[in-house]
Length: 313
Ligand SMILES: [Zn+2]
Image (cartoon, rainbow, N blue to C red; front, side, top):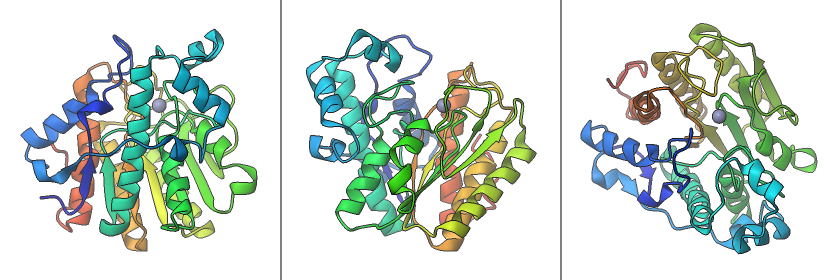
């Protein structure tokens, strides 16, 4: 048994057909974690979907209505870069519920991982970049509304900047949620609304330089705000074989990144909830490995065994 909970449902699957986003990855991660003995069936907990009320804590009534009634304009639908369907909307509401559940579990156990989520390109009034709604932001606002947390920090290591996160928590909200994004400068999104802290990495950044930035950025952020919850967006796409990324991390480097985040959160006594976000490796197996390694790294750090840098393979 893991010393923390994994949140997962087969219904995390995104019905988007053949697509660069490997929607089957969630089930394959689940299956690999079981087959490899990293996790047992009892480690997985099934989330309930978020309610419309939850989603409305972040998104505008107009946008939510369009999603629920299938009345997005052609342009809005195009901007999603995934084909709209009512089933897809349901999958995103479930992802939001999964992130809420993981945030709640993290407060109990120090860490919890949703084998999904991390849809950081969704804005209050529109979706883009494969993201319909922002599951992590919904989780933060719901936890705050329920008085379970007062402050939060997002730590986004997807290769693409967390533009939706930055927009949602900008301005008046900057003191209750501190947003950090480490990303490739020369990549989507073209317009990058400012996070509380943005680390713009040059093309081809490798393990050593990247890992130094991870530690520095998290230290800097924690120096500004000691949050009640860290939301770690553990994108697999800084990988050197990624089709939509231009950084040069190895699989080992990405696991080292996860271990740094978990060690620092644990040392500070701050609960951390994890979502997976992007991963578009030429070989989907690599994406599965990188995401599974996030669970392995958490296990090593939070079970107090190992040094958190070994690979699961
Ligand atoms: Zn990405």
